[in-house]
Amino acid sequence: MQIVIFGAPGTGKGTQAKILSKKFDIPHISTGDILRDSAKRGTPLGMKAKEIMDRGELVSDDLMGGLVKETLENFASNGHGFILDGFPRTVNQAEILLNIFNLLKIENPYFIVLKVDDEEIISRLSSRRACSVCGAIVNLHDIEDPKVCPNCGSVGTLYKRKDDEENVIKNRLKIYRESTFPVLDFYKDKFKIIYVKGTDPIDVVTSNILKEIEE
Image (cartoon, rainbow, N blue to C red):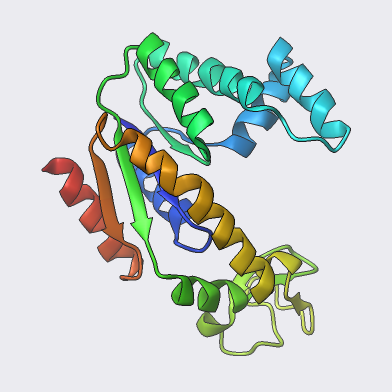
């Protein structure tokens, strides 16, 4: 089972990836995980990426593609599946991933896209708060007292992160639409793309994803 999951910030993509990872007993791989793991293992590509990140620079598409190949190759050789999250983000990366799939003889991956309209995403993300003590991320809609962290009980420690400011969210969504929509267009004639409504309750979204996969 190989899955590539897409979704704008705030669509619940990470939540669904974790659920599917447990359901199918396959690893959930994010680009952040790939970078950290490769650096930790001390692979040549991982060390090169670490040097770039330590300088505060962005890892190039080609280097990121090499790291993705290195990671997926490891799982493919062991006969395991995976859920890939956060790559590809651009058409260039989509072409790189297609080449990786061809090399690893991955022929029928599932491309899952969670659909949530911008207004709902803005509402979700702008209501998020982080705890300065324990680092927990909570939503004001889900907690009883906005002054108390439900995770550690600290009072007055919940704050809004810069990423969750409305103007920042709108810019992130703009970038997502501009970069990721062309990726889906690139793949539409090559693989089946599954679109699932992401505004339903978490268990319903999961059920709909599983139903689409079974079909």
